[in-house]
Amino acid sequence: MSAAPEAEVNPYELLELKLDCTEQEIRTAYRQTSRKVHADRNRNDPDAARKFHVLTQSYELLLDPLRKPHAI
Image 1 (cartoon, rainbow, N blue to C red):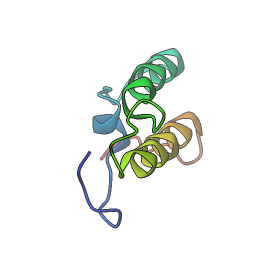
Image 2: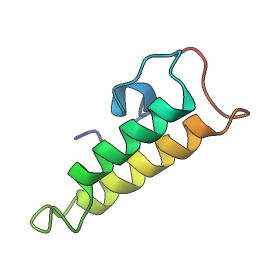
Image 3: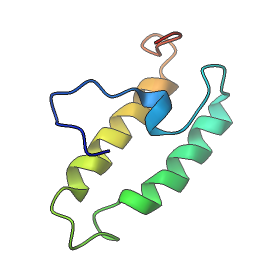
């Protein structure tokens, strides 16, 4: 997750999911990953808030059936 803010992020790769993942798999992967990158757990990482924001955007994208990329 050391990509520049302008770089395109693949939400499936970020959450380590397959293209045919279920909603429950998305939620579980988000919870597990968010614990690792949250700013409160990484106080010494000045980039932690941005990483968490990118993660949350990816999560919201994958849960939205109209915006969810089906093939990347």
